[in-house]
Image (cartoon, rainbow, N blue to C red):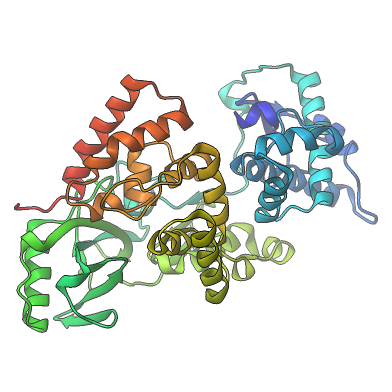
Length: 467
């Protein structure tokens, strides 16, 4: 647990009158006096007034918690926050080598100097909280104070009044808009690239996907439970009809390998058309201070995140801590020429087929080298199945580096094989469970349960309705 490594997660009122700390995962109250004691152990900037300094201390400790979470996510946080000289060998061991450790630190933007300061502050705060509260303190409900900022980013769940976080009368109506897609083999449609086909009020997208085409459309209002949306029979009929008429094809349900659907949380009016609902995201702040984000789409997620956090921080906070997302590259990003060179080198050094090496780099970018390294270490540099160009090593990578914890995480959301394979991945589910089990500690009985649960949902969620 994170709290065992760095036990203080701070939540405070704007006036910084109280601070709540998590000790071993349990919130405890830290008074002003106690906060000042912690603050006295942290460096003070020249010229800072008392109020300014106290706010800076709280912000520093919150930032400390966030950075510690970065270390945890990268699987390199030492077990006890100590000085860097003592922590470094343990971190090297957890990462599997100094080169890999430095790569992960670079990935989360921590220099060696910043890491040293992070560990120093973590040690100071952990020692103080442990000495003041002991290993376990449970507060009363009255001791839990308000957070500085609360953001409602619950998406399509906000359309359901019984599930919406902190409902506010008169708040903008969230209208779930269903997008449905079918997946067909690449050879069933001859085209040089993607295209859009206009239909009344909407468009149908024909999008190239490795070895496949994805054909889909959006703008169907959908009030079903949002957890696992599915393409409907009428969606499939519409998509096949449009493509066959406009492109003189004869596609049928037998050509469809799989389907999938998603819901977009558009901002609109009750009973209004999803076609007319705004595609732009909308950030608003309730009188209570809750910041809400609705609308938008995945392709603008960084702008949405920036605008939401800016609204939560306010003008002064945004000025003090401007967003870095516009300059922050996606993990694994590199110029196309560099990625082509990397794919060729992996092909040459591993003996993998060109298609496997190229697809590996297409999916993971510069991280592909590390995936290969993990594959060598685990003896997993082989195809996951006969009908896929994925490697067994990618399953282990998903669990050890990408927080995958189920077959659904791997086959549906990491590899997208549940949508591409006609059997929904049944032919590779057992092997996937074995590799995941080795990473997550599953015995044979747990693996069997995971396979059964995955196939039961995948066949419903990604199957072809009416077939």
